[in-house]
Length: 463
Image 1: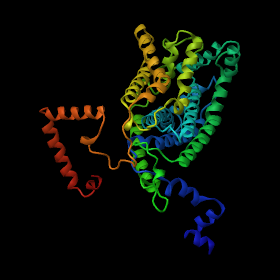
Image 2: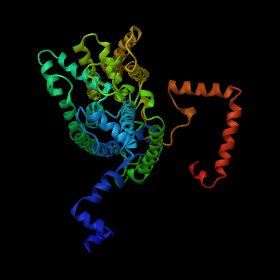
Image 3: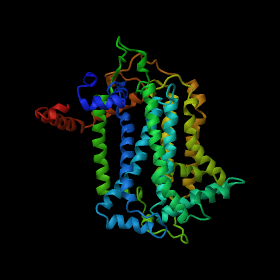
Image 4: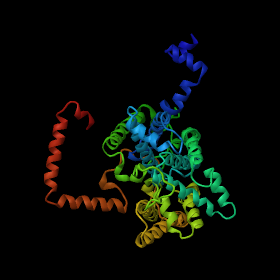
């Protein structure tokens, strides 16, 4: 009788007596109320979780055939590609997944900068997220060595040798990391162990803590308003909706679009022109032959350019690590009481735009050979990158903000009513397009398409 009263399904009732199944489901899905104004930027957290699952599953299958031996590693990868059934697909899913992991993580972090997701009360959520980013960097770096190709070998050699620049303990530390005086079979074995077992466990634990901390304080939203402050008589946030089914369905749609994009890459451009898989990595590692241009994989290139921008080896290493660790202090560098960029002053919007341009510029410069012009741009972009953080306590304290509404703005305001200089530019651009001779033709075609969709019973549901 007790089991039936708890839940009509006897199996679920039996489980719920022995494990808080329904309690967890309600707290984190069915009765977890998220703001109702989530937008495009809120896809990337769930997509990062999806890619993590892909990396773990494909990684397990790859380790079944991979040989962590300096004499056999490269050949074992070739065997996976050529002789193992569907091995090429699993390898490309893993390599593409690594790059897509960083794509969604970088966009997820940028969303935090847009809407102030690092501000009180989400400082711990941000710190745990940045800890995951550090673990992801370590995971990717150690996995990068495993194919034992030319760029893998020499890229790892360059990065590890940076530690030798630390005064006093540098050489000892570099030797300890390698396990040898050079990158060798010992290095490969320990990197494989950390990549396949240790760091994935750390990542999973950090993901769990990140989600628990997020659900404790509640999700942020594009307006930067705490929905828990306004509740109805039942304690339900007035501007919140249950995460399930509303956002689980939204995330499923986003996952379908994302997986379609990934499938196109895997089947038609798995190397992505040398960005995802570099041509030198199809050559076995040769400790006696240095590649003409040593560069890391694309998602490390912004920090690699920061390293190259400083002439001193030790100074470059400090700057590279500072570029990562300074993100941890963002909650205390930003002194503006307003969270969302929608209501922040022009100074922060300009600073964030320059920061995004500098990060992309640093990433591009890291993919090309060093030249005097590239060196100058590298220094400029590095100064902008650090200036965004170091000057933040000043320009965020002085910025003039817009009044923040008491409740989330939903549905979004019409384009004609949106405030801000960037919306003025968008309206001016749309007005210019409407004045061109091509606009009536395009508008007429679009109207025809809408009529076709409206007349179709299935497609009309999506309008």
